[in-house]
Image 1 (spheres, rainbow, N blue to C red):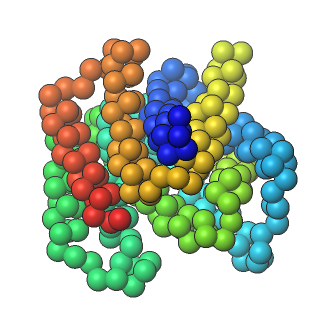
Image 2 (tube, rainbow, N blue to C red):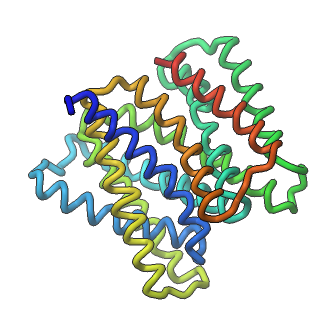
Image 3 (cartoon, one colour):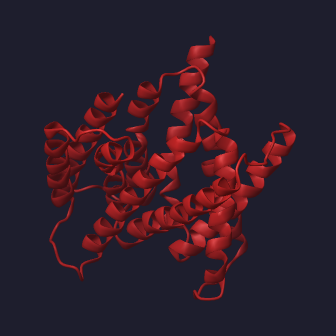
Length: 283
């Protein structure tokens, strides 16, 4: 296998793992915040071991970078908490599809961050994506669990869009593994107080699942994605990433018997179509 094909396999495998991570929101009987705490705790330990093994310099170049990475860690905690909350309130399909709206938010943030003019096509794409989200909602009632799941999913996509913009700023300064470690370490610290504010009970099964979620579906998948980007164009990786909700929905149907309705499927096709278009256009 040549280097390019190996990198393609790494990207596909990482996206596959990212897509399946949403299923943990259903198989774990824990509050979403506690799930995220376990995820970032075990992942940050794993990343720290990798950083020490590779002998990477963990010191940041400027003091203000610690502050900004701390902010990014807080945003990451909100992003993952709302993501799992969306899945727990609704379905894996709804959580993954509504989170997938983040590239559309990015198209609006990019002109602000990089001093560019917003284009009419971006507004049209946003409207079409919004229609896809509306289709995913069976009946718009704030008291409805599925509606609440959609709202939390969109919030998750919104926060991830902000995080991706900030990550772009610092990925030129530091290795992605260093950025990921600091973000997840901060997210761990931010979420620790919720250990004493939430009602839950741990058992051995849930601890093992949290370890797997943190190491395999977060730490390893993150490193695979980064490594794959060395020999694969960002545009190609972005298009492959569009498969994340597809993998999640397929396995939710097979393992959890969560079959998307025709309306959800149509809304999903619209959302993923606009995501695919935005990814190609932005590159």
